[in-house]
Amino acid sequence: MNVHVDIPSIKPLIGDKLANWLATPRPMLIDGKWTPAQSGKTFAVYDPATGEKIADVAEGDAADIELAVRAARKAFESGPWPSMTPSQRGRLIHKLGDLVLEHADELATLEAIDNGKPKHVARAADVTLSADMFHYMSGWPTKIEGKTIPISALAAPGNQFFSATRPEPVGVVGQIIPWNFPLLMAAWKLGPALATGCTIVLKVAEETPLSALRLGELILEAGIPPGVVNIVTGFGETAGAALAAHPDVDKIAFTGSTEVGRLIVKAAAGNLKKVSLELGGKSPNIILADADLDLAIQGATAAVFFNHGQCCNAGSRLFVHRSIFDRVVEGIAAEAAKIKLGHGLDSATDMGPLVSQVQYDRVTNLLASGHNEGARAVCGGTGVGGKGYFVRPTIFTNTNPSMRVVSEEIFGPVLVASPFDEVNCALVAEANNSIYGLAAGIWSNNTAKAQALANRLRAGTVWVNCYHVFDAALPFGGYKQSGWGREMGQAVLSNYLETKAITTRLPV
Ligand code: NAI
Ligand code: MG
Image (cartoon, rainbow, N blue to C red; front, side):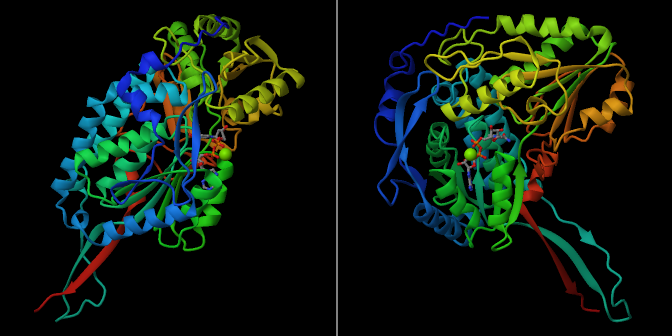
């Protein structure tokens, strides 16, 4: 494992255009105009690989949320958006997907310097999946259909009715997103809200506001009318809380910590706005004795270390059949040793830093708790130290369910591994022994057996002989305290739709 981290100077690597864009404080998108905060305040954005400031952005708060919500309301009630045909709306969303691809390099660069992830990964995963999301969603406006329903009530000679349902947009939508996939989370949220005809106030994470602001420029370039998408940069306790509590917001969609998810639910109670939540995870990854070991080792490595472990669906609890336990753990440790830590703009980098000092402290404190509670670090086990928020990929064995590293979401490159003897109720209970239920992995050459096990896992996604396979068409979301509702696929549309039943008496 390379623990020495070379940090290049970013200026020559990002190009003049982006350097100029970053040189002036970035305003917010409100009612189609680039707008500074009402307070005039800005806050700094940092490169997590160096801890150095890379830009300033507007510090939006309740006053800016107010303006953004008013703009979204106006755009929902009047103007071109509500009178557009579904086909016109779909074409605009498709255009946005095209523009994301056209600007892929620039967007990937922003993700690398703002979030810390390798640019080549951001290009292949975050940017591609964001464009896919818009392209996929662009097909829905013309396909969101109601039903005709035969009714029996009041049936009598002379009483005849025609009943039908009409799905309608829920209205003004507040969306609050995290920093682990800044552009992709914006796309996951905006795509379905646009497809259903809603208008939006998007509050991006304070750690990583840049790519969404650039996306805002592309939203205008695509021709999406003013006020349909408003983007506010600011902190959770101020801007985020004001959005969640706002009485004229019809629905709030949140991705982030389970703790803040609870605050969102409370804040939403004021006007009983609809709520969808995508929260934490502590997902089990189970390797059966008959698995293809090379595939399983590679897969289990990626399951936990992809995006530096900063994935809500990270496969962070590994269960391996005792007969192959040592080989698998050694195999993953050998893979971890090959992971090159570095700056996201260095093409040789496999893993960047964690996103912030706060996350570094959180993850290294959890690592310390693992050591103190008696877990054995097979590899890693510490932060790198020095510049940037780098943490070494870590595998803990000798764990038990009462340890914090086993029960808590770590959101860093940390795996806990334990052996099992049989695929039985005890294994299923252990895999399901979490307040979360977001995802799970199973590795086996006996697909029927894997399928049977998949059915018993309390998780919104189960991957068999693969992991982290996301697609705009596949619903994603959590059981238990991992959330409410689903992102993506046809399933997400219901988060943004109301159903109106219209009954008409027919002349006889
Ligand atoms: P967070 O839940 O505080 O932040 C996520 C978003 O919520 C940000 O936009 C933030 O500004 C906003 N927010 C924070 N407080 C708010 C409030 N009172 N009202 C409205 N919005 C608010 O997550 P944070 O602090 O960045 O990370 C803490 C932990 O959360 C991580 O260690 C990880 O375990 C988990 N997390 C889970 C994510 C997921 O994808 N499910 C993503 C990010 C974090
Ligand atoms: Mg927080």
